[in-house]
Length: 188
Image (cartoon, rainbow, N blue to C red; front, side, top):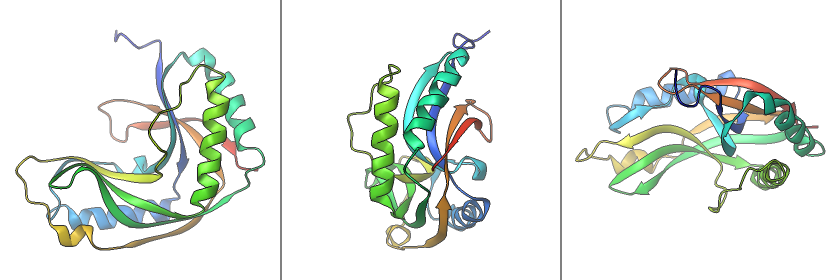
């Protein structure tokens, strides 16, 4: 029995449609020989994180879903575009490779603010760092590996979609895919 078996590790995100996930996967497959990351994200796990929550007792899921529904109300669907790439961390050895998010970034930032405000009332502390919407593609660049800077200068376009919901994902560590949808709220 694991220590946190009675808790679920959760976060809130904007899910991506299958066609966007497939374009991201195709691009990643083409770059794996040029970008030496230890861990590439599974296609089904691509998303835009809105708020990481941490551990929560499953019995509190209804309470969290009610807060998420309140936060989503009045925002309406968001026109989104996945385009461009970048990294977080040291330029020579980045910790994260990501795809960018464009278009309704202001709407997404407003939604993030409402979500974190609603969840703060449930005891979740908002992160201090600035909200930076992105889609994580890979993690942990191999030390000593060569990073092809030409790849990072490209601005691939992965497509547009209408984001119409927020989801609550549960993390299953060491599984692939590792995220399971345990709740959702429509952006109305």
